[in-house]
Image 1 (cartoon, one colour):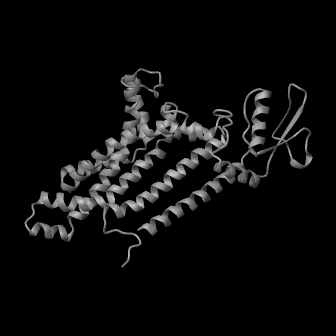
Image 2 (cartoon, rainbow, N blue to C red):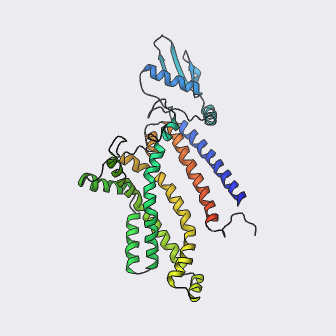
Amino acid sequence: MFRYSLQRIFLAIVTTVIILSLTFFLVKLQPFPATVGNTDAQIAYYSHQVSLGYVLEFSTAQTNLGEPLYSAVDGFGASHFYYQKPIFDQFLVWVNGLFHGSWGLSSKISPNVDAMKLIIGTSWTDSRLLTTVKVNIWPAVISVPLGLALGIWAALKKNKLTDHIISTLVMVFISVPSFITINFLLLLFSYEWGWFPSQWPSVTAPLSTRILGYFIPTLSLSFGSICGYCRFTRAELTEVMSSDYLLLARTKGLTRSQAITRHALKNAMVPILPSILSEIIGLLGGSMILESLYGIPGAGRLYIDSINQNDYNVLMADMSLYTLIGLLSGVFLDLSYGFIDPRIRMGAKK
C-alpha cells in the first residue's frame, strides 16, 4: 500500500508538470498580454517584465526581433523598445520563478499584482479561493445526507410508487444544468418575490443580507448533487440487497432491518463514500459559471475573467491550482478505498 501510494503521488506530480507545461506553451502562442494605463504605467509594466525575464528592452529598434511589443518615449526623452523573448526561454524563466514563489503579474484584472495573490488573497477577507470554498461547503453539507437518505429510501421501496416518484424526480433534476437552475431561482426568488439578493452581497452588507446571499447558489448547486448521490446510493444498495450473503444473513435469523443496517449499508458505502469525496471536489470546478452569473468573487469567476481578458499569468496560476487539486483528489480517492475497506489493498501480497 505504501509503495502504491508513492507511485500514485509520483504519477500525479509528473501529470501536473506535463499539463502545466503544455498549457504554458499553448497560452504563450497567443499575443503577449498588453497592459492598460498611461505611458509611465506601461513603461513600468514592461520594465518589470524585463526584470522577470519575459521581455527584452532596447533603446533603439531591433530589426531582427520582429515588431516590438511596445515602444514609447519617457518624460526624460529616453526611448524604450520592448521585445518578447522566445517562448522556450520564457518557459525556463517561468519555471525558475515558480521555485522562487512567483507566478507572474496580472496584466488586465489587477495590473502589476502577483497572480497567485489574486487567488489566495492577502487576508481571509479578500481570498477568492476561500470564497469559492465557502460557497461550495453548504451544498455538500446539504446534498450528502439528503441524497443518501433518498437513495436508501428508494432502494428499500424498490419498484414501488415511492421508488418511481423519487427516480422520476432524480432524472428530471439531474438533467438540468446548475446555470439553468440559478437563472430560474433568480427569476422566482429575487426578481419575482424579492426574498433573496439578486447578486452576491458585498463584505460591507449587513450580516442578514450576506447570509441570505448563500441561499440561491447553495440551492442551485445542491440539486444535481442530491440527485447524483440518490441515484448512486439506490443502485449500490439495491445490488447489495440482492446478494447471496445478505440472503444467508436473513436465514440465520436476522430481521430485514438488522441485515440492512449491519451488512447491506456497510458494504454499499464502500463505493459511495469515495464518490462523495469526488463530488465535493468536483463542485469547486462546477461553480465557475455560477460564480460569474451570481457575481461571486471566487476563484472560479477569476478563471473565467482571466480567459475573457487574456490575463495569461492569472490564467496559469488559477489553472495550476485547479489541476493540483484535481490530481491530488484523484490520488486521495484511490487511496481511500483501501482505508474504507481493509480488504482492498493496492499492491498487497497475494
